[in-house]
Image (tube, rainbow, N blue to C red; front, side, top):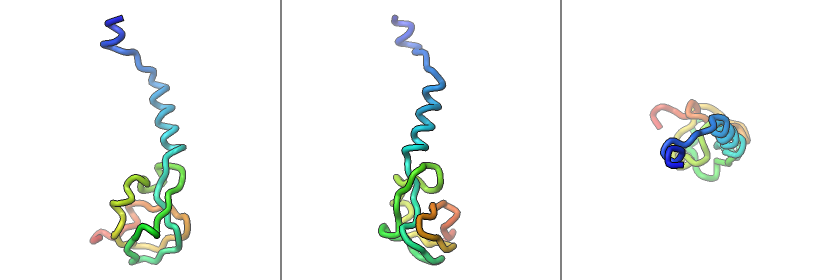
Length: 88
């Protein structure tokens, strides 16, 4: 019993299942409206959409507020780090 408590057996497939569930149930940031290059993002420009991993994680929305877009985005298009100007 003590040996199992000190060195628990971890089923690797469970870790992969959790990772897959995070992707399925997680969310990424997307444009809530059509946006032109040069727009400084505000909260009302953002929406959160499934799945995770398609761009900036929704939990990081504060990091994109105030940053300038370097290209046009259409409604519901996922937002990636490559969409921002370097000098933002």
